[in-house]
Amino acid sequence: MAARAPAGEGLRHAEDAPPCARGPDAGASQGLARSLIAVGLGVAAFAFAGRFAFHIWKPLEQVMTETAKRIATPSLSSYYKGGFEQKMSRREASLILGVSLSAGKAKIRTAHRRIMILNHPDKGGSPYLATKINEAKDLLEATTKQ
Image (cartoon, rainbow, N blue to C red; front, top):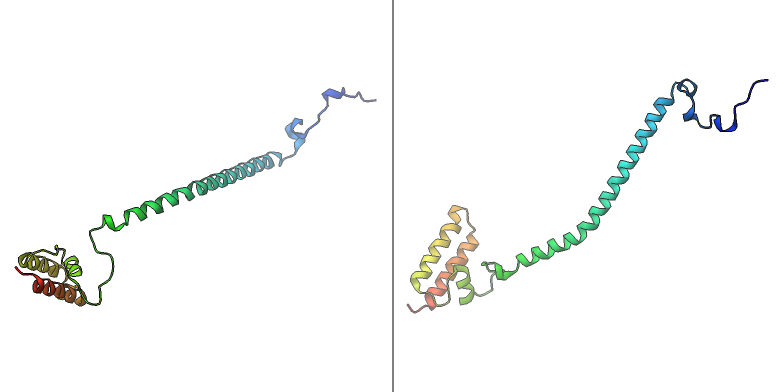
């Protein structure tokens, strides 16, 4: 009869067998298994990083939106926000020309010339804006005493 190996000395797992006993494809399947595990861990890490980024982004988006609203407040802008009134007032005319209500005729003419050079229809400006600029100059000159 053949001698039996003691209970603790026997081969229990395929990894413990010599390479010739495992088979020719054993090395390739182990490499594939390791590659699949590495890919799976990479996908999991990417998913956790994406989840973390989305959690960070929501408060950051709120901060950016609030900052943009604060920057766009009319107090920081030197331009008049809004459309034209039906009948032009002195206030609107002074806003269009960028002069004070108490400006003299010389200052009104200078401001009109400067704005018309930038907005003249022959230079690509709007005819409607040119009309409004001329109307503002005429209204302010007619109501100014100097």
